[in-house]
Image (cartoon, rainbow, N blue to C red; front, side):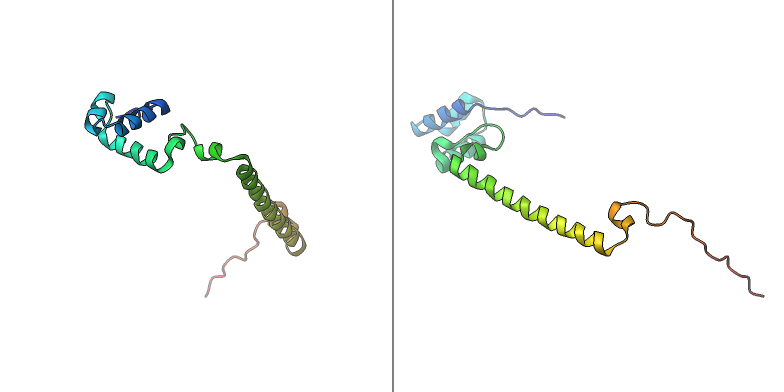
Length: 124
C-alpha cells in the first residue's frame, strides 16, 4: 500500500510552535492541526535547537543557510581535494604506462590468440 507523505509549510510549523509557547496544549494543537503529537514533539525539538532557522524546507537547507564566506571556504576545500585526487590519478597512469604492457593501459584485449595447449597423451 502506497501512503503519501504529508508536507507541512514552514509557516504552519512556526505558528504551531508559537501556539505551544503561548500555552496551548500539545494534544489540543495536534487535534486542531490533525497531526500526530509525536510530530509536534519533533518540530518542537528542532525549534528549540535552531530557533528561527528551523524548518528550512525541502532539500539540504544547510548549504543555503551558510554565509558566503563559509560557502566559499567549503568550495575551495572541495577544489583542493579534487586537485589532490587528479594528481594521484595522473601519477598512477604514468606509472602504468611505464611499467605495464600497452594492452593493460589502453584496456585492449591482452591476449587475442587462441591458447595452444597440447592434447593429453594417453598412457599405455
